[in-house]
Image 1 (cartoon, helix red, strand yellow):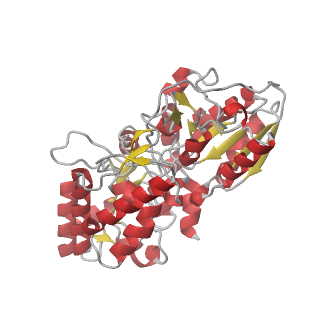
Image 2: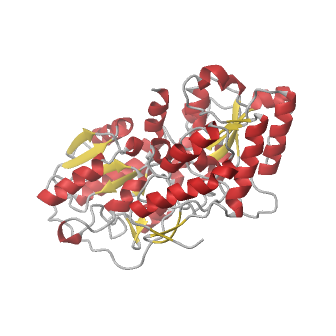
Image 3: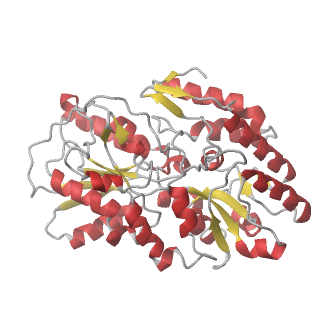
Length: 446
């Protein structure tokens, strides 16, 4: 299925695409982490669990480091909300052996992997800031991109990629229709009304994908998933930052400029792909939506910086994807394990040719300079990508449950049935709170 392939390619667990939280912020409690390394052997074989998309990268490391011994295993990479990794680690914790040394996973996995549950009350993931990865390296990751890795003041993973939301647009159609690319959400809404009147059937967006809320409501700084403590979640969908986006989208859905369908839905690309004027979506939309799914000819698609709200001094955006690499605290070869995850996430050699935008800022520059990542577009996407990378709103937190479930099971069916987003906000709130309670969270007062 085309959508599943794209989710896997971008992963982030695809955290929202695949039904795993892809949030960029987690409240970090204070207190030291317990970490007692296993007896070390720099010649020990390192077992790596990777998804199929990142397999070539791990193999490239092996080729360029022939002195390192790797045992490479492919698994689902926590895509589509899989709990395979967690289940296996729980088994290894009980038996006292079998842990992989390095794993590719979703940010949601870090919420349990950083908790002390294994032997000697030690977390599965090793705290990388405790002498394993230099602080200057950690400081070079995009602003906020390591937030899902941070618990108890420690850094338990390195971010592989991010999926910052930008404003995608069809430059050719904008020129043909005489439109200017909107810079604010109010201009976006006004353009929707104009398009509905002058070019009915053309679209400025869609809300039917499992990750649409991350593009829109996260970008609006809506406190749908805001941790105020390690186990306390604040969800307030009546906050003005939530209702303003719901109201805006309701008006555009009503006039037909925003579709209730899913961009990655069955037959959408064939039926309506050529009529998508704009898409508020992640950095991977250019290649995986417009190029791969819609088959939009090269030289037509451009990317603009995240939209602002009139009167709001903060320009914020969302994030739809981006996965992580973790090193096991049980590894007998922390040196090679750490070198591997550092190379995978920070080296130009690997990241310049990566399928999605690197979280490590210097590597992101190399990625943008790679012609294969730019030649498809109508103009240079670097300014938009770089601005958005540092503008992801930190108030949408990484939780132990997927942020996509309630949106998909409660909101989308209601909208499809004709209800407005505004009217559906209370039900969405209740569903999130119920999931949070089931996952062990206390609900904070609104």
